Length: 516
Image 1 (cartoon, helix red, strand yellow):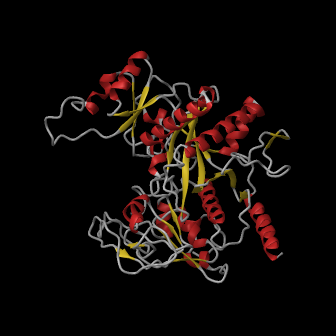
Image 2: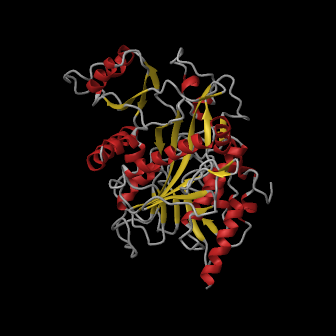
Image 3: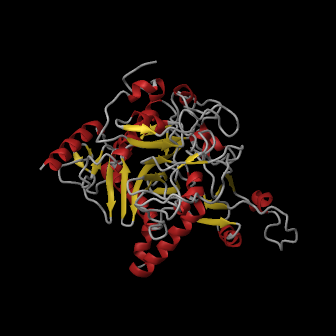
């Protein structure tokens, strides 16, 4: 198949995607561990060239022996799976062809002697092959980074996905721990009133370490619903609701007595949260909002917020009468797609633009302004809670997926933060959203050096924080409802996004500035 238009990427041939010119004086060389939308974006980007190796189309077998999703047709087969990147259902982590190694973590002068410590062979018997650093950009998975980062050497120009200890924000128990610590610090330094700005995540305890504290809280609030979540899993795996302590007896059985059997398996770390029993419903169904946040630096903190996102709806009307029904209470696509009446063509998603219009029509501009201002606060407070903990590296960047829930008072709640939000599309609209999201992410990183570095908006990304809050330019990038501006911060989540026009304007302006 040979098409010049991109609708969608997995229906195009590689030749048609690469039939473009080269930006700058040489090609930008990339590697990618995944076989979904990000690979389509990278292969279709002008002047970008895939580094040949086992992570590209030459990789035809996964670790489990099944064909990899390396071609356009197999990418199409991935549609609707809703997998987290770097997890099951996508291409395995690319440990066969890793970046240059040795010496320190960063620098400008390579050395050539040593190779990374740690595993030299993948599970399944496929040996690692250490590359010579012939790449400029690497969309790696978390497992690969954890195995290789500490012994990698990165050249000045190289960019890589994920900060070394990104899990400080994305592992559920650590996220809550860091938020609680920053809240206490804020209350000490600025007073109790300021501490109220952290009141956006449900009462949470880590189990088993805080089990006895949780029991005391449980007994003080009889009859309410709690939700148990594995601390380090995604896609709704292992989550369940309960109202009685005996419902978690099997999970914690014997763990809180003296350990006489040293071979006994310790229960997996969970978090237990007070379940939000009054979610905001649309059509009687619960939903949460997936929001994309890009961090290009933690020191100083520099944060971009993407205008487009989506609300994920449950497939079944909400009720507290059936707390065991995951189709009622969990909005994850990986859960909902298994519902008996799930329609893969329609899915269970609204765009944030549609959601914002709905809320504005029903509750008015001021109420919506308060909602989205609260979401901005959640984003910045979450990142500030780990700002001094994350190992900052100018070579690294992170794209987070924030999951936000609204209650029936329109109060936003932070549910979790994902280090690898799903990039596998669940339909045509989802593919187009994620393709634009990722293309604009590369525009922000600007490896081609075509921008001035002072831009506040690049495509669909708006600069939310740059060592402090960023304000919108007067008369520019307005998000309006009924003709009136509803925000002064440079935050436009759910607002109209003519990203292609905006990109043309900023590149033209940047070119003119560079010529003067």
